[in-house]
Image 1 (cartoon, rainbow, N blue to C red):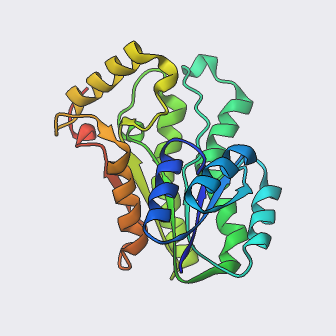
Image 2 (cartoon, one colour; image 1 turned 45 degrees about the vertical axis):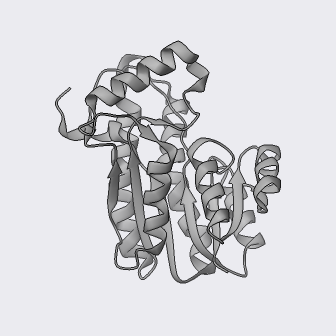
Image 3 (cartoon, rainbow, N blue to C red; image 1 turned 90 degrees about the vertical axis):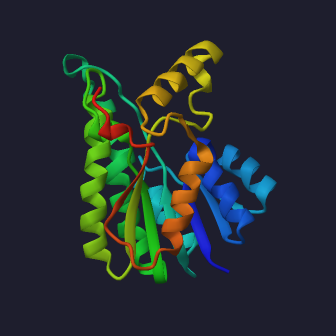
Length: 235
């Protein structure tokens, strides 16, 4: 049975990936900053839980030691949004955003490379904002864009391990529930209007792309865009 570690796997798209992977017969390890939340999900889907915090390298090293008998796939969905204009940037939050999206996954590669099995893969998460610049999305845009280059270079550095990224658009993953029903509905409606396919994304759209990449043995160094063509439409 192939083992998959889903970092950020206790919530939103990470949890959706973990649930699907368990359903598809993978041995799932739910890695999350909130160990309790990871354990709840792990109990529901028959997985195991580990505390994995992309902001704390020691937790990455500890997780690699726990999983020293081998890992087939790693999916990392972490993010640390800092949605402000340039004049309002906070250095610590800026660094946290880059760590979640770029530095953290690179350190995951550092610690897990020795335990990745033959034909292993990594899947990072980017986002459509990387290709749609706008006021207030500076940090999110640059970090998401940087993921595309990170997977290219990680793929070359870790070869033959495959490294790819998924870049979602606005997806109804549960992450927007905090806005309240009215604002969430408005956001999803706006997303549907900007997508060429005429609808907003669902969690399953993204999960399908992730699961395909786990099996796509001749794909490496690529970013797969799952945003209904939104980046091709002018703002």
